[in-house]
Image (cartoon, rainbow, N blue to C red; front, side, top):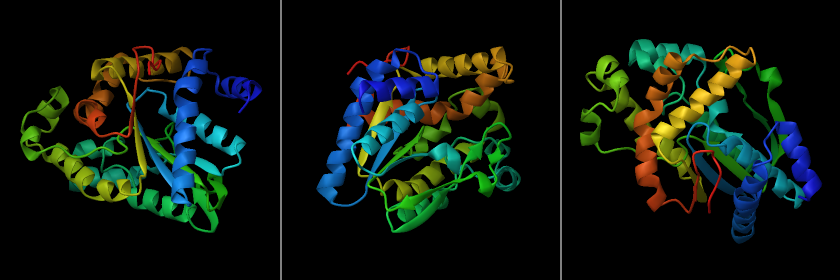
Length: 283
Protein backbone atom coordinates (compact mmCIF):
# COMPACT_ATOMS: atom_id res chain seq x y z
CA UNK A 1 0.00 0.00 0.00
CA UNK A 2 1.35 3.44 -0.85
CA UNK A 3 1.75 6.30 1.62
CA UNK A 4 -1.70 7.64 0.76
CA UNK A 5 -3.17 4.31 1.80
CA UNK A 6 -1.39 4.42 5.15
CA UNK A 7 -2.54 7.99 5.75
CA UNK A 8 -6.10 6.95 4.94
CA UNK A 9 -5.91 4.05 7.40
CA UNK A 10 -4.48 6.27 10.15
CA UNK A 11 -7.33 8.73 9.58
CA UNK A 12 -10.04 6.05 9.47
CA UNK A 13 -8.84 4.39 12.68
CA UNK A 14 -8.01 7.62 14.52
CA UNK A 15 -4.42 6.47 15.07
CA UNK A 16 -1.43 8.53 16.23
CA UNK A 17 1.36 9.35 13.82
CA UNK A 18 3.52 6.86 15.73
CA UNK A 19 1.60 4.09 13.97
CA UNK A 20 3.76 4.76 10.89
CA UNK A 21 6.62 3.03 12.70
CA UNK A 22 4.39 0.08 13.60
CA UNK A 23 3.25 -0.13 9.99
CA UNK A 24 6.86 -0.25 8.78
CA UNK A 25 8.31 -2.57 11.42
CA UNK A 26 5.36 -4.88 12.08
CA UNK A 27 2.53 -4.70 9.55
CA UNK A 28 4.66 -4.73 6.40
CA UNK A 29 6.78 -7.71 7.52
CA UNK A 30 3.66 -9.50 8.80
CA UNK A 31 1.97 -9.10 5.42
CA UNK A 32 5.15 -10.31 3.70
CA UNK A 33 5.32 -13.39 5.97
CA UNK A 34 1.68 -14.18 5.28
CA UNK A 35 2.18 -13.81 1.54
CA UNK A 36 5.17 -16.18 1.63
CA UNK A 37 3.16 -18.74 3.59
CA UNK A 38 0.38 -18.49 0.98
CA UNK A 39 2.86 -18.97 -1.87
CA UNK A 40 4.65 -21.87 -0.15
CA UNK A 41 1.42 -23.67 0.73
CA UNK A 42 -0.34 -22.93 -2.57
CA UNK A 43 -3.51 -22.58 -0.51
CA UNK A 44 -4.92 -20.45 2.31
CA UNK A 45 -2.43 -19.52 5.04
CA UNK A 46 -3.61 -18.98 8.62
CA UNK A 47 -1.47 -16.63 10.72
CA UNK A 48 -1.89 -16.45 14.49
CA UNK A 49 -1.26 -13.05 16.08
CA UNK A 50 -1.01 -13.06 19.88
CA UNK A 51 -0.81 -9.91 21.96
CA UNK A 52 -1.93 -8.87 25.41
CA UNK A 53 -4.79 -6.43 25.99
CA UNK A 54 -3.99 -3.02 24.59
CA UNK A 55 -0.99 -4.20 22.55
CA UNK A 56 -2.51 -3.03 19.25
CA UNK A 57 -2.98 -6.49 17.73
CA UNK A 58 -6.38 -5.74 16.20
CA UNK A 59 -5.07 -2.67 14.40
CA UNK A 60 -1.95 -4.52 13.26
CA UNK A 61 -4.05 -7.38 11.89
CA UNK A 62 -6.42 -5.04 10.05
CA UNK A 63 -3.66 -3.05 8.39
CA UNK A 64 -1.69 -6.17 7.44
CA UNK A 65 -4.86 -7.58 5.84
CA UNK A 66 -5.36 -4.35 3.94
CA UNK A 67 -1.77 -4.47 2.68
CA UNK A 68 -2.37 -8.00 1.42
CA UNK A 69 -5.55 -6.88 -0.34
CA UNK A 70 -3.56 -4.13 -2.04
CA UNK A 71 -1.20 -6.83 -3.32
CA UNK A 72 -4.07 -8.70 -4.91
CA UNK A 73 -4.61 -11.30 -2.21
CA UNK A 74 -7.92 -11.98 -0.48
CA UNK A 75 -7.25 -11.51 3.23
CA UNK A 76 -9.38 -11.37 6.34
CA UNK A 77 -8.52 -10.37 9.90
CA UNK A 78 -10.46 -12.45 12.44
CA UNK A 79 -10.64 -11.36 16.07
CA UNK A 80 -11.02 -14.05 18.73
CA UNK A 81 -13.03 -11.43 20.64
CA UNK A 82 -15.86 -11.71 18.12
CA UNK A 83 -16.34 -15.35 19.04
CA UNK A 84 -17.12 -14.97 22.72
CA UNK A 85 -19.93 -17.15 24.01
CA UNK A 86 -23.25 -15.35 24.36
CA UNK A 87 -24.03 -13.88 27.76
CA UNK A 88 -26.63 -16.61 28.35
CA UNK A 89 -24.08 -19.33 27.62
CA UNK A 90 -21.54 -17.78 29.99
CA UNK A 91 -24.17 -17.40 32.70
CA UNK A 92 -24.93 -21.10 32.34
CA UNK A 93 -21.24 -21.90 32.78
CA UNK A 94 -21.18 -19.61 35.79
CA UNK A 95 -23.94 -21.66 37.41
CA UNK A 96 -22.72 -25.09 36.36
CA UNK A 97 -18.92 -24.71 36.73
CA UNK A 98 -17.80 -21.50 38.46
CA UNK A 99 -19.18 -17.94 38.84
CA UNK A 100 -16.05 -16.34 37.34
CA UNK A 101 -16.90 -17.86 33.95
CA UNK A 102 -19.57 -15.20 33.53
CA UNK A 103 -16.74 -12.78 32.70
CA UNK A 104 -15.64 -12.94 29.06
CA UNK A 105 -11.99 -13.29 28.21
CA UNK A 106 -10.25 -16.42 29.48
CA UNK A 107 -10.22 -19.72 27.60
CA UNK A 108 -13.58 -21.40 28.08
CA UNK A 109 -15.52 -18.21 27.28
CA UNK A 110 -15.10 -18.42 23.48
CA UNK A 111 -17.04 -20.55 21.03
CA UNK A 112 -13.92 -22.26 19.67
CA UNK A 113 -16.03 -24.57 17.51
CA UNK A 114 -17.43 -21.51 15.76
CA UNK A 115 -13.92 -20.10 15.25
CA UNK A 116 -12.71 -23.34 13.72
CA UNK A 117 -15.78 -23.59 11.50
CA UNK A 118 -15.28 -20.01 10.29
CA UNK A 119 -11.65 -20.71 9.39
CA UNK A 120 -12.58 -23.91 7.59
CA UNK A 121 -15.35 -22.16 5.66
CA UNK A 122 -13.02 -19.31 4.73
CA UNK A 123 -10.72 -21.90 3.14
CA UNK A 124 -13.55 -23.37 1.04
CA UNK A 125 -15.56 -21.97 -1.86
CA UNK A 126 -18.74 -20.15 -0.87
CA UNK A 127 -19.86 -17.28 1.36
CA UNK A 128 -19.09 -16.92 5.05
CA UNK A 129 -20.94 -14.86 7.66
CA UNK A 130 -18.56 -13.72 10.39
CA UNK A 131 -19.97 -13.03 13.87
CA UNK A 132 -19.47 -9.77 15.71
CA UNK A 133 -19.43 -9.36 19.48
CA UNK A 134 -20.84 -6.14 20.92
CA UNK A 135 -18.82 -5.40 24.05
CA UNK A 136 -21.12 -2.50 24.92
CA UNK A 137 -23.90 -4.98 25.73
CA UNK A 138 -21.56 -7.91 26.50
CA UNK A 139 -23.28 -10.12 23.94
CA UNK A 140 -23.07 -11.38 20.38
CA UNK A 141 -24.47 -8.87 17.89
CA UNK A 142 -27.61 -9.80 15.90
CA UNK A 143 -26.88 -12.02 12.91
CA UNK A 144 -28.19 -9.33 10.57
CA UNK A 145 -25.18 -7.15 11.46
CA UNK A 146 -22.59 -9.83 10.66
CA UNK A 147 -20.24 -9.29 7.74
CA UNK A 148 -20.52 -11.74 4.83
CA UNK A 149 -17.52 -12.34 2.60
CA UNK A 150 -16.81 -14.53 -0.40
CA UNK A 151 -14.43 -17.43 0.04
CA UNK A 152 -11.96 -18.99 -0.31
CA UNK A 153 -9.52 -16.37 0.91
CA UNK A 154 -5.75 -16.45 0.57
CA UNK A 155 -4.80 -15.38 4.09
CA UNK A 156 -6.52 -15.42 7.47
CA UNK A 157 -4.99 -13.49 10.36
CA UNK A 158 -6.47 -14.74 13.63
CA UNK A 159 -5.70 -12.28 16.40
CA UNK A 160 -6.40 -12.58 20.09
CA UNK A 161 -4.83 -12.21 23.50
CA UNK A 162 -4.42 -15.98 23.99
CA UNK A 163 -4.03 -17.15 20.38
CA UNK A 164 -1.43 -19.90 20.26
CA UNK A 165 -1.17 -20.20 24.06
CA UNK A 166 -0.56 -23.53 25.78
CA UNK A 167 -1.72 -24.80 29.16
CA UNK A 168 0.27 -24.71 32.38
CA UNK A 169 1.30 -27.77 34.35
CA UNK A 170 -1.16 -28.76 37.09
CA UNK A 171 1.27 -27.91 39.86
CA UNK A 172 1.39 -24.28 38.75
CA UNK A 173 -2.35 -23.92 39.35
CA UNK A 174 -2.06 -24.62 43.07
CA UNK A 175 -0.70 -21.19 43.98
CA UNK A 176 -3.01 -18.18 43.35
CA UNK A 177 -1.46 -15.32 41.37
CA UNK A 178 -3.69 -12.56 42.75
CA UNK A 179 -6.50 -11.75 45.19
CA UNK A 180 -9.19 -12.73 42.69
CA UNK A 181 -7.89 -16.30 42.55
CA UNK A 182 -7.13 -16.38 46.28
CA UNK A 183 -10.54 -15.14 47.41
CA UNK A 184 -12.95 -16.23 44.67
CA UNK A 185 -11.31 -19.41 43.39
CA UNK A 186 -9.79 -20.91 46.57
CA UNK A 187 -10.20 -24.50 45.32
CA UNK A 188 -8.75 -23.68 41.87
CA UNK A 189 -11.96 -24.81 40.11
CA UNK A 190 -12.09 -21.83 37.74
CA UNK A 191 -8.42 -21.76 36.81
CA UNK A 192 -8.35 -25.53 36.33
CA UNK A 193 -11.34 -25.33 33.98
CA UNK A 194 -9.68 -22.51 32.02
CA UNK A 195 -6.44 -24.49 31.82
CA UNK A 196 -8.25 -27.65 30.68
CA UNK A 197 -10.09 -25.73 27.97
CA UNK A 198 -6.80 -24.29 26.74
CA UNK A 199 -5.28 -27.77 26.72
CA UNK A 200 -8.23 -29.30 24.83
CA UNK A 201 -10.51 -27.40 22.41
CA UNK A 202 -8.17 -24.41 22.03
CA UNK A 203 -5.21 -26.60 21.04
CA UNK A 204 -7.37 -28.24 18.38
CA UNK A 205 -8.19 -24.76 17.06
CA UNK A 206 -4.55 -23.67 17.10
CA UNK A 207 -3.44 -26.65 15.00
CA UNK A 208 -4.90 -24.66 12.08
CA UNK A 209 -2.18 -22.00 12.47
CA UNK A 210 0.71 -22.02 10.01
CA UNK A 211 2.61 -19.18 11.70
CA UNK A 212 2.54 -17.71 15.23
CA UNK A 213 3.50 -14.08 15.83
CA UNK A 214 3.76 -12.57 19.32
CA UNK A 215 3.49 -8.87 20.12
CA UNK A 216 5.51 -9.06 23.34
CA UNK A 217 4.45 -6.58 26.03
CA UNK A 218 7.14 -5.56 28.56
CA UNK A 219 5.25 -7.05 31.52
CA UNK A 220 1.81 -7.77 32.91
CA UNK A 221 2.01 -4.57 34.98
CA UNK A 222 2.39 -2.55 31.77
CA UNK A 223 -0.56 -4.41 30.21
CA UNK A 224 -2.75 -3.53 33.21
CA UNK A 225 -1.73 0.10 32.77
CA UNK A 226 -2.67 0.01 29.07
CA UNK A 227 -6.13 -1.23 29.97
CA UNK A 228 -6.55 1.49 32.59
CA UNK A 229 -5.59 4.09 29.96
CA UNK A 230 -8.18 2.72 27.51
CA UNK A 231 -10.95 2.88 30.11
CA UNK A 232 -9.94 6.38 31.21
CA UNK A 233 -10.28 7.55 27.59
CA UNK A 234 -13.74 5.97 27.37
CA UNK A 235 -14.80 7.75 30.55
CA UNK A 236 -13.41 11.06 29.31
CA UNK A 237 -15.34 10.64 26.06
CA UNK A 238 -18.59 9.90 27.86
CA UNK A 239 -18.60 6.25 26.78
CA UNK A 240 -18.86 4.93 30.33
CA UNK A 241 -15.57 3.08 30.79
CA UNK A 242 -14.71 1.11 33.91
CA UNK A 243 -13.30 2.92 36.93
CA UNK A 244 -9.86 2.00 38.26
CA UNK A 245 -11.14 -0.58 40.77
CA UNK A 246 -13.25 -2.26 38.07
CA UNK A 247 -10.24 -2.33 35.74
CA UNK A 248 -8.07 -3.97 38.39
CA UNK A 249 -10.66 -6.66 38.94
CA UNK A 250 -11.21 -7.21 35.21
CA UNK A 251 -7.53 -7.57 34.30
CA UNK A 252 -7.06 -9.97 37.23
CA UNK A 253 -9.00 -12.53 35.17
CA UNK A 254 -6.25 -12.31 32.53
CA UNK A 255 -3.22 -12.13 34.81
CA UNK A 256 -2.24 -15.80 35.14
CA UNK A 257 -2.32 -16.59 31.43
CA UNK A 258 -0.81 -13.25 30.36
CA UNK A 259 2.19 -13.84 32.63
CA UNK A 260 2.49 -17.44 31.37
CA UNK A 261 2.35 -16.37 27.71
CA UNK A 262 5.06 -13.74 28.25
CA UNK A 263 7.24 -16.33 30.00
CA UNK A 264 6.63 -19.27 27.69
CA UNK A 265 5.69 -18.18 24.17
CA UNK A 266 8.76 -16.17 23.08
CA UNK A 267 10.88 -19.33 22.88
CA UNK A 268 8.59 -21.03 20.35
CA UNK A 269 6.76 -18.28 18.44
CA UNK A 270 7.79 -17.97 14.79
CA UNK A 271 8.32 -14.22 15.18
CA UNK A 272 8.48 -12.14 18.36
CA UNK A 273 7.96 -8.37 18.21
CA UNK A 274 9.07 -6.70 21.46
CA UNK A 275 7.00 -3.65 22.43
CA UNK A 276 8.05 -0.77 24.68
CA UNK A 277 5.79 0.75 27.33
CA UNK A 278 4.17 3.00 24.69
CA UNK A 279 3.32 -0.04 22.49
CA UNK A 280 6.02 0.91 19.99
CA UNK A 281 7.95 -1.97 18.39
CA UNK A 282 11.69 -2.10 18.67
CA UNK A 283 12.58 -4.90 16.27
